[in-house]
Image 1: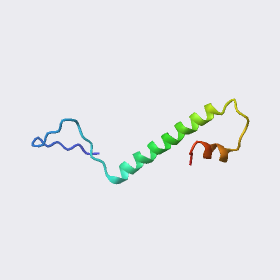
Image 2 (image 1 turned 30 degrees about the vertical axis):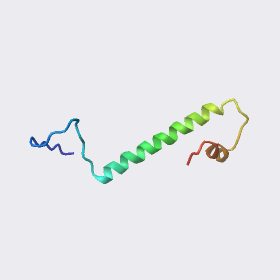
Image 3 (image 1 turned 180 degrees about the vertical axis):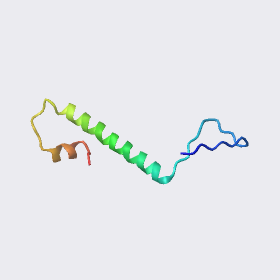
Image 4 (image 1 turned 90 degrees about the vertical axis):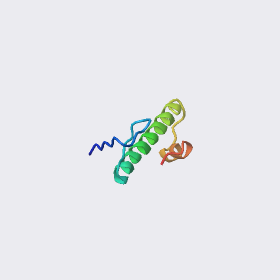
Length: 64
C-alpha cells in the first residue's frame, strides 16, 4: 500500500484509493458477511420449527 499526499488538493473527508482487484476482494467479503447474517437470522427463526431441508431453508430466506 502506498500513501499519497498532495497538498494542492483538499477533501472534506479522508479518501482511500484501491485497485479494482482489492475492491472486489472487499466486496466479496461483504457479500459473504451478508449471507452469513441472513443464514444466522434464518437459523434463529427456525430453531423451534419442524425440521426442513437445507434447500427449503435457503429458498425461504433467499440464501445462495
